[in-house]
Length: 271
Image: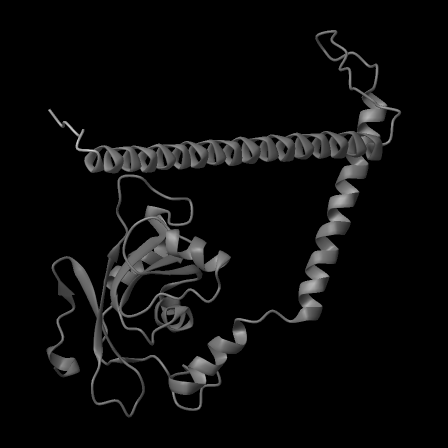
């Protein structure tokens, strides 16, 4: 389909022809409209957001920002596997390697609502090139993309250590401030006249840990004794059964011998 035969609107969606590069012979169509849902999200305000479908796998946030940037300032671009709440984005923040595969949908959030109006009036006569030649920010595909994604999986040890150190510094600072605030408010009644009482122990925490350790040791000892007693009862029961069976066998043999003797003396009367 040539650019001259591309309709500007289909089923309420505006149409944007796109190609991967200038050399690409094939292209795709992006379809977009104003975002309209019953329950609006803070990250996707309905008055400032476009809803885009049929986004190809190689089209990323930067491409869409360049595409719609001509209509106004773009605040954010959200890519998801399917329409709905921003679950994919939340998971990607937790698991960075998790990426939306295949065709997807997008939400273009502008800085003001007038940009949405301009976008809905936009007419594209020529396909938009997603990865212009000579552009340093061009799309990375193939094995280079896989290598880049693989390298991005691993956090730099120095940066990771810095994050951990910064977190602990902030944590210690917050704890110190809470402790100092508690000292200031100690014994001071609130607006209702109540005084918050906090329990303070003069005993070290280690003593409590030792008591807990002793309780655990006593519990383990009791469990072992119960297990040994149970094993003894099991052994005793087996021995008792074994002796009873041996006694029955002995009696059976004696009865066999008695019957044999009676037959020999012709005194055997079965009935």
